[in-house]
Image (cartoon, rainbow, N blue to C red):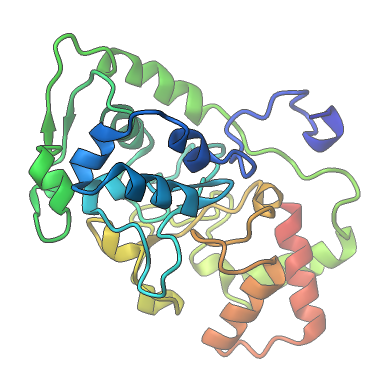
Length: 282
């Protein structure tokens, strides 16, 4: 990928969400998925069916916790891979706020990739919410030797040092973005939750599904049954695959329309366009 697509960071796209990588299809190529099948209590054919249902740029981290491969509407329970940049000062790491950056590093390395590490979270003992994790003893994993824990501090420091990328030159209308910024901080009330310059709340940045006007399926797969206020810097990198945890909104305009209707903001079409230009500028 050339520099023009990633201004200021050369050819590296550190911490960008990979929306092209088909993780499920790659894992499904494994000739032996018996470990996963036994963990979930299903056949290897079913495991492959689930993996192929994800599609590019998606992953289902909760599958090994609750065994829920599909939503009530029959669609995949996987979510879009989130970016890992611009997290300095941000309280929680994932769409549904499981824990901090370093919590999630330990979670993924030990429970998802089944590396040799230590992981402790007694919330996973809840057999009603996390039947697979409770059965597998994921609330208290101890490995000897522990090859993961000694690496967590350095990885944490590195990740927090990755700034969000700036949008490419010419990718938004500056005059409209200036007007959109006023709307963001004023009439549209976006800054109530997306507090500049973090663009999420300092402190407990979590909301119930009812507070943001969406269903609670994904929130109910996490310990606190809530969604995190997503930081907005580098938002232009999210465009492929859609917005929100599951890509339910294809464009930023759709996101703005959702909140305009849910909060009865009564924004004009021009105001909505200006707000989108500001979001593209972050």
